Image (cartoon, rainbow over all chains, first blue to last red; front, side, top):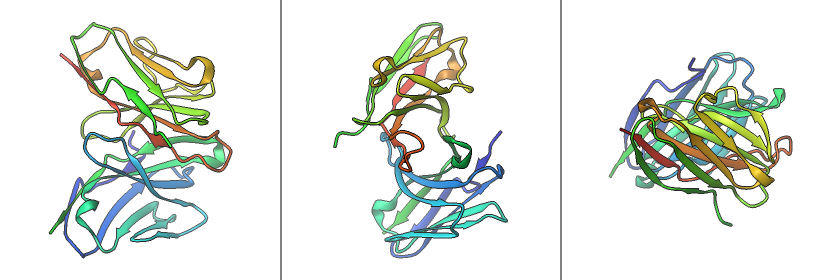
Length: 114
Length: 116
C-alpha cells in the first residue's frame, strides 16, 4: 500500500519562477517528513526536512510546509534554477515510534526551463 | 568525507542466476539500509541494520533475498535465484545510530540490476 503519494509525476517551470511540489500521506503515525533530490545515475540526496511539531521549515530557496490535518506537505523552490532540474522524492517516517525507515512517494520530475 | 560506496554500478544477469551487491557506508554510521527502487516508483526498504544486527527485514523476500553486515561495517545483499521482477536499482543508505537525533539517511549511487 502506498502510504506516501506524489500525484504529479512531472512539473515544468520557467527559470526564476516558483516550483511547488505536493505530497500526501495516509499514515497518521508519520511524524517526520523529508524531501530528497535525485539526479540521473546518482542516489537521492537529502534536501530538507520537517518535524510534525512545526508547520514550516525554510532553508535558503527551499521551504517545506506541513498541514497535519490534511496530511499534506509541499515543497516550494523560489526562485527555480536550471540546476534544480531533478526528481524530487517526498518521504516520511514515524520516529516517535522508533521507526526510522523511510516510506517514499513515487517522485516528481522537475524541469526548469531557461 | 567519503560518501556511501556501492558496487557494482550495473549488473545484467539471466533469470534464475545469483547476484550480490556490496555497500560500504559512511565511516562511523551505525545504521545501514538497503532499498529497492523499481522504475517509476520510490525506493522501498528491504532491510535495516543497526551495527551488525537486523532491525527490520519485514519487506525482504526471504525465500530469495539475503543480506548480512558482518563486523557492523560493510554489507552485502544477495539474490538467489533472480526473477524478472527483481530488475531495479538497489540503493544502500547509512545514518548515524538511530535515536541520536541525527538520523538523516545518506544514499549511495545504487546498483542497477537488469534480469533477462
